[in-house]
Image (cartoon, rainbow, N blue to C red; front, side, top):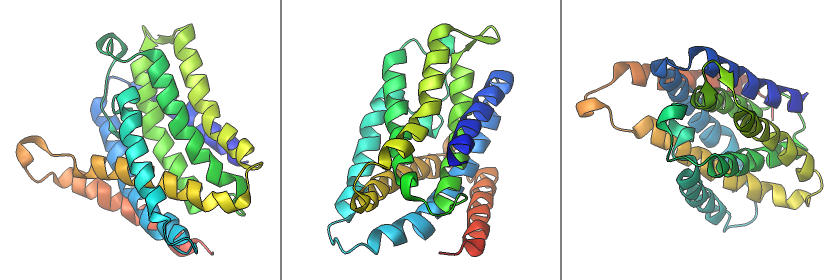
Length: 230
């Protein structure tokens, strides 16, 4: 069930990107909404679990996640936080580099799902909510004349299967490692959501629409938190 949800979230985003890819504002709005949701999941769900660990140095893994995401963005050119490109504008993005960056990012997210006791956990919702806008941008970037090329289909396929592969392989890892992977992903989520939320508005004016979308994302995550039983 979890694998199906992961695949559907990516497929839905890619399909929407293919159809509505020219509507950059829609992609930005989805990203901002997901950022509010994601940072709330981090602070209310991921970090409390991480810091309940007996390892007093666990914060190093969160920092490592932040630094890792900074490195991955050299490959993905900021896809994760909405640096929007169309295929004919993205000559500087190597398909192999994009594929590698997106795969590592999604694969790591999937590993902590290996030992999830409930199907619809807040952490899973965070990934699903996060997948939709990223997949939207990926679909918009890769589509050419209303179609996906063979290489584009490969990139989409690799990204779609990355988190499920992380989940499946994570089942063979030592369960005691889960908190370290969760800390690493928490750092990745924190970096992505913070960049989206705090990215400067035009002329540094107050963007009430952006604030409203962030608050809406936070409220949606808090509602899920209230109904989630640990």
